[in-house]
Image (cartoon, rainbow, N blue to C red; front, side, top):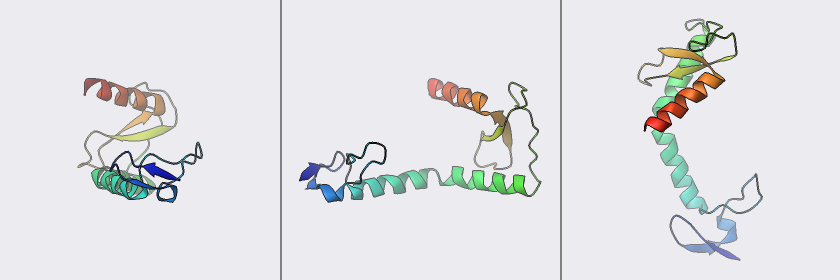
Length: 111
């Protein structure tokens, strides 16, 4: 059997398409296009990944201290670190999951 890649438009055999773990069906992009897209995502998120790693290490070493309460709603919930600027990896805002999600929803709505 063959399938046409949604990205490059080339028709290839099914074995050139990864299988989705959630549905068991073949992906729409061939493996070559999937790998190129993955590499582009990694390059785009490199700065964010580095900032998260540095902040996590600083928290583990006791340099960054979890305040125990959300900076937004002031509730004592499990907290996540939010970076307004990935160039400043130690400048984090501590938010609960709900407030963190709301913040990103506002940013998406403003964009």
